[in-house]
Length: 174
Image 1 (tube, one colour):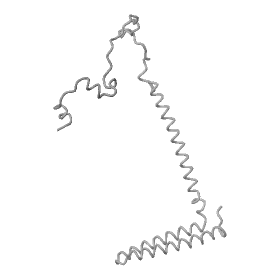
Image 2 (cartoon, rainbow, N blue to C red; image 1 turned 180 degrees about the vertical axis):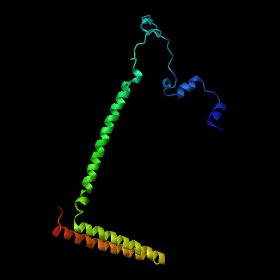
Image 3 (cartoon, helix red, strand yellow; image 1 turned 30 degrees about the horizontal axis):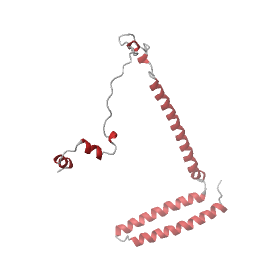
Image 4 (spheres, one colour; image 1 turned 90 degrees about the vertical axis):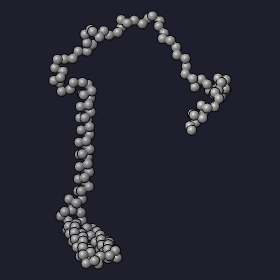
């Protein structure tokens, strides 16, 4: 049974009881509707005659024009500005990418850089092939993987310090 059904079965409240329980009665009732005020000064002569000539005329080649409305012109202008902004952002990104990658291009003739790239390729290929062979035999374990990762870490640290010494002493950057 809903609250509305239970309340409907009880006795009805008198208007005095309603006004006593209602703390702010003026907010719960709609204001009275007033009548329409006519002072006689309004005139129908200012209304536009719909049977008369058009208020705004359009040129005869209107449909042949590229831009037909001011809204269309604003949109085209906005799109041109947005395209210009996007081109500038692309140029900035390309320049930033060139600056970031310029260290690689500058060091392509550096023998230390080339040796490190070759060593990383050979070590990666060797570890991958060795891991595949161990897996094929069924001997690949987490212990072997951990030892290999530790060996790669030690080799990387030694290679870093040796390369740093060579770069500082034998082959300084341009």
